[in-house]
Image (cartoon, helix red, strand yellow):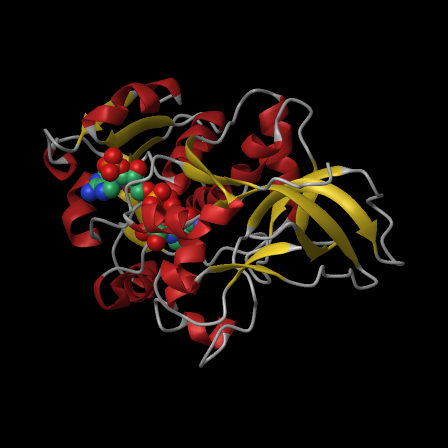
Length: 324
Ligand SMILES: NC(=O)c1ccc[n+]([C@@H]2O[C@H](COP(=O)([O-])OP(=O)(O)OC[C@H]3O[C@@H](n4cnc5c(N)ncnc54)[C@H](OP(=O)(O)O)[C@@H]3O)[C@@H](O)[C@H]2O)c1
């Protein structure tokens, strides 16, 4: 099969299209014929092993996995002998940010992992980017206990995490102020933003409003700058650990002292989340934002684009199979 092979840490040039052996599923695994996948910031982190801590999970000297790619949509081609919840021919979607391997024509993943059958109303290309950014967003939303009637400011509401967070927060009934670039004002309004701040024209930390939660989905701010935006008892969250990993320490410190808190959840992969996203997609409450599409052969180029930190939503990789 064709795969984008990854044998060392480094820039996107290390990613090479090669012919490799098709994997076979273990007893508890399914073999998926991949039709669509993504390049996201998790892939970029693994690719360059940045931050360094990535090496403790991914291999100290060189990567243990052979291909990147953590989101997928495709068709079950074979099942291990213990698999009961999927059968050959099922269309599935999900993510696996532990084992990766979706930048290939075929991949294996455990039956009990974060995958389920495809939403009825979606193509492979739309389903593939529906899970990983949304799962980060959901873990922040749950940890902050965001509820109907509350107010939240989302900085970077146009990223993979931010655009999912905006839709999920609206689903939970909170009021959203979204911060984005001029070119994306209409987009964030269409995703449900109640108020929009264009960061090229206004500093969101100086708008005089206060919120129950400030979620910096692109990690460009700090608790120190955003504290003034929080109501008493308010919560600050960021998708990045911040300068000197300050958000991790602030999460511990502010959980004991002061009424305004930093929270920094460590997201866990859960099948229930993918089931929840499928339910929302089918109900028309959530749809991933797609920026560009590239063929599998151009994963390195797609990665260069994702590394700019300026994609809008998600970058999809389409996987063509010669024998359809
Ligand atoms: N799987 C994941 O996605 C993942 C996993 C773990 C951690 N993270 C971290 O989470 C963060 C977000 O990832 P992502 O994939 O959601 O983001 P992303 O898709 O890379 O998006 C970045 C978005 O943020 C906007 N942006 C850039 N600079 C901004 C600024 N100063 N203020 C407001 N918006 C700004 C960009 O739009 P404009 O250029 O148009 O402004 C772009 O749409 C990254 O720091 C990443 O390292 C991501």
